[in-house]
Image 1 (cartoon, rainbow, N blue to C red):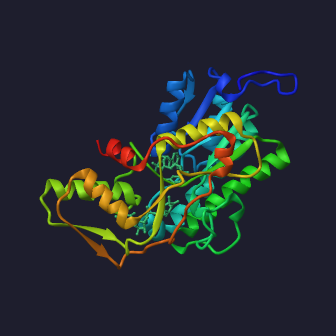
Image 2: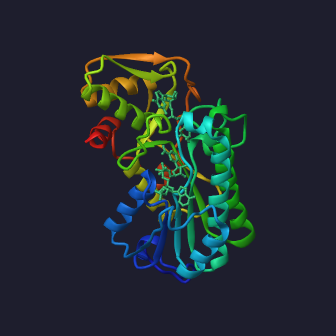
Length: 317
Ligand SMILES: NC(=O)C1=CN([C@@H]2O[C@H](COP(=O)(O)OP(=O)(O)OC[C@H]3O[C@@H](n4cnc5c(N)ncnc54)[C@H](OP(=O)(O)O)[C@@H]3O)[C@@H](O)[C@H]2O)C=CC1
Ligand SMILES: C[C@H]1O[C@H](OP(=O)(O)OP(=O)(O)OC[C@H]2O[C@@H](n3cnc4c(=O)[nH]c(N)nc43)[C@H](O)[C@@H]2O)[C@@H](O)[C@@H](O)C1=O
């Protein structure tokens, strides 16, 4: 790590801390965690733009930005993101914005000529609804998708294929990481459009503050989900930027799963809400289970460090 040899004249990512790194989506859950990690590691030239400063769906603006900034590394953590309700309510926004953002960024990264490595972030929803568990990278495109988020999933699958195609045809070192469900600071706590964990933290917190007798939780409570703290994901992203250069995408999960009922009980305990849970069966369950097989990245030497309860307590604070 960090050495320069005749076969590979470039320093590794972690030995190149003065190089310009563009973190797209640096104010979001994932991008902010990656930014914190890069700065704590001593990276000196991290470039960021808010959505208002640079709309990544606009091709000409993205090309002009890359031509002017000439970044050496790119982490693509900007995307149109949301939970089960947002995904099923705004399918056009989810497919269009994500296809546009990733196509513009990957293509501009090639055209500007300065990019040595790019990492694209997908999601575990790329896998078939009934994929064998735990889900290996090889399960991609082996069956039908979960209908509540298929539009987003199709865009993310296209992102993986875009990175592969640009590697094969143009030699661009573009890699893809597929995280499981994430949580942590800077999450989106919108009451309807967020993911389950921030939604429940908010709902239990408000119910406690208002002395409400009950909290409504969506679906049946039986779906299983795997959660990873975003600081662990940020660690994995830096690890892959430094260590991985391959065609296939890489799963990043925690390896442990809970039912939504267990999760709701845990959030209730962490927040200190005393009332009862009521299940709203008119809301969709989504995929019944999506535990990732993360043995590929673990085999390379990365592993998660933050247990769910510990991460939840920190996030609630
Ligand atoms: N959250 C999760 O549970 C999971 C997330 N992921 C993946 O991680 C990545 C990041 O997700 P997450 O951090 O949760 O998302 P957030 O919604 O928290 O953040 C998204 C970021 O993208 C930026 N953005 C959105 N649209 C545009 C645009 N048109 N132009 C420029 N910037 C834009 C936003 O900018 P601004 O703040 O300026 O508005 C924001 O910083 C995504 O690719 C997602 O698929 C994968 C698995 C699970
Ligand atoms: C990361 C992944 O996230 C999304 O998939 P998801 O895992 O199904 O997302 P979710 O977090 O919204 O829900 C998880 C489970 O939890 C239940 N649930 C209970 N109560 C609330 C609740 O209050 N809000 C939400 N959102 N869900 C609730 C909900 O009914 C479901 O059974 C993708 O669309 C896509 O964005 C993606 O890639």
